[in-house]
Amino acid sequence: MKKKTSNRSGLLLMEIIIAILFFSVISAICLQLFVKSHTISRDTEELDTAVNQAASVADIIRGTEDAETALREYYPHMNTEDSNIYIYYDKEFKPCSEPEAGYYLEIEKGSSDSGITEYRLSVDKTGSASHIYELEIVIYKQLKP
Image (cartoon, rainbow, N blue to C red):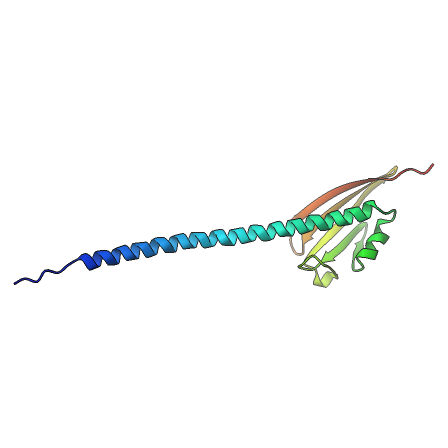
């Protein structure tokens, strides 16, 4: 008598290997999507905070006659180089000194012609060449008679 061997177990093993391969490829794709969404979320939060900080500084500049003195009151660790003002922030966008900085806001004072003063504010990450956010403001001062 001949004994009949079944190839049924080999086919089942092949099906299981294909299913595991399929699920591992799909899980790798899903993992990449989660990492990408986390990166986008972090960048969006960074941009939102940069916009808020630049808007706050712009409001201070617009609301005072002497912007540098007013800014020094709110940001005691700020630095002034030439006509630029630098305000430093830590990783959580809290004002700090330059060595602890993760971000900085640069204020460039432009021309001041006949009561019109232009400023350019840019928020940058320390060590990065690109700006996170830029804001240009123009202040119109009333001429004294």
